[in-house]
Image (cartoon, rainbow over all chains, first blue to last red; front, side, top):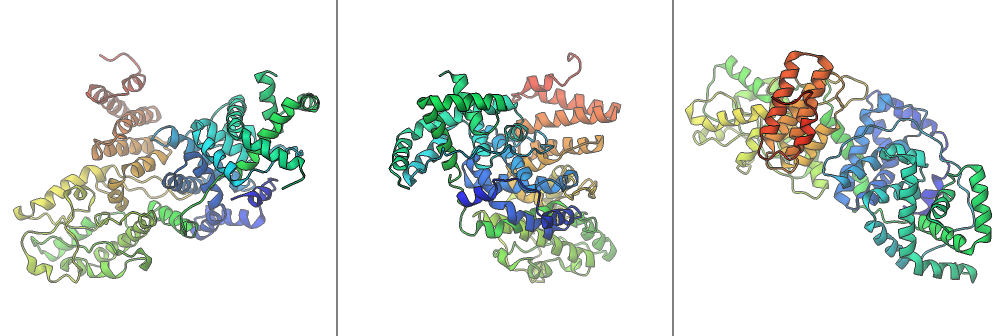
Length: 206
Length: 352
């Protein structure tokens, strides 16, 4: 789950025609159609869950539960919306609640969907090597669950602040501050490596 | 550079600033190396985040869709599927045939290799001699076995040993008539621990004294079964719900092993009508009774009261109010109640 997947998700286009078809069939009870949809989004949903809960067994539970809830709520789902972000939101919500407490309390499925605001591409990227990647992973693990969830949804799923707010049941302003705090912490952990990366870029290297 | 300004950098990165603010930040960053560096760091962190590990065990994603499907299937029972507990069929068969035997009906253990899929063979061999002659009784275990096989497959996939008891047709071994046991083509199964009894469909045949165990199993199964209703799992359809007092869900046995799974299942239901709230209320109560020492038991008890309150609010019935008050007071009277305030808040007026 690396760059290629991120690139593919960078523009939230309208759902593919066959996806609406599959979901319509699933809505009528066609489990085979739903299974196809599950196969399509399973890695993404699992990825969101794992990055928040940080344990395979729990992520497995959360991922299953997210699809189950999606199945149960299909009749309320607008087929014109993309399924991916919706089920990821469910997963994120479940994941955070799972980390927060033993009970997976459902705060209510998120309604409505917004287009992610177009990102300013900007030349502000740096590439970290694998050691730095490990440091980042450890730093993410060290974040408080709420910060981690916001960070994962933003940095990995590229959800808007509003979508994140809906998904986690918090105010958009809270999203912004939590996100910033999370990023600052991570950036501090990565500071030594970022210097190297900047150096490499200046030298015209990879 | 203040914290507020730094925070704006984060929002700028996400394109969440209004145009006017964006322009401000851009202008500032162009002139301020410190901010420019910070912005680059934040972007780098995001970039690397995409590569945070999300690895799963080998073959995990190959199996995942089928497991989800199996879970949906085991939760959403189409109405055609018999939701009557097995024992009604067996009891009917007995009445019809007038056979009373002290022998417990013995079922085979679960198929250890879930890869074989629906374990059609063992159930076919398993049913009691009398039940064998009864179509529905023989068919029902086959369906339940299939379901259990699916659940077991799921558990296998999670790396857990499939548990023999997680199989609904399990019967207690009878002390006496081993001769009738010879009639069974079933392979030997390990003796099942007492604790599973309450989740098993009891070997009902209202046995005489010799079968005290069976009667106990029936008795224990009753409270667990009474509340194991199932919420609609089929989208948009009002799925047939078990309303029989002893409507046991086969998955109940698996869930006795994993209370957290049972908990989440109950929690996942979204009651809207008074009836649905009542059902959830009873499920919470049953959960707490079935798992009294679980750390989730207290939460379940509180939720029982909450659901009772909602049922009352939805119906306006005096009987629901009575049930709610009783549940609330029962909780508050408990020595191990740790969430008193939460329950006290639900009571509309000061307690007597």
